[in-house]
Length: 125
Image (cartoon, rainbow, N blue to C red; front, side, top):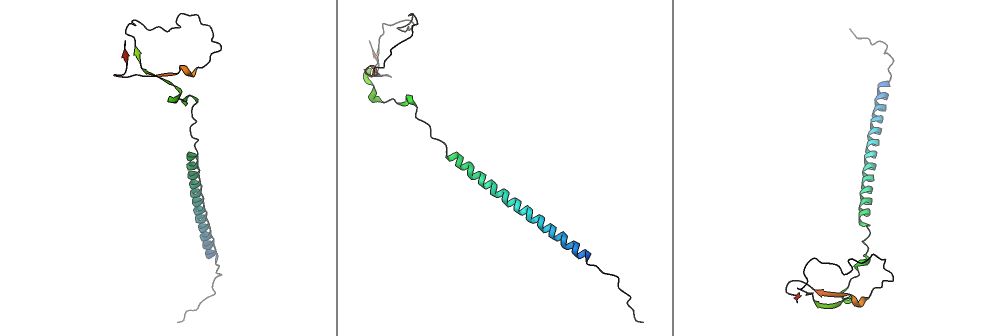
């Protein structure tokens, strides 16, 4: 007995088309993720470089006006002389005077004096 083939039903390639579209969407999604990761990495590298430049471009500190102290601007007074006759609390020479405002104050560099102090240097009278 021979098998007789009947009329074949209508075949469509809809399954293949859907599988192709699905694969294409999957490839596009993977591509988008890879591009996003690469762009994020580049952005981070640029930020790190900018942070390094910020740190290296720090201004050097300014020289203070009061830092202009040189030994050549002072006269040497020798060893510090201590008077042993002085006893009691120390009082300033201007203590007890009325508080008048100072006017016409001038700096005299000739009065700038330096003395040696320390162990075995001081002179006691």
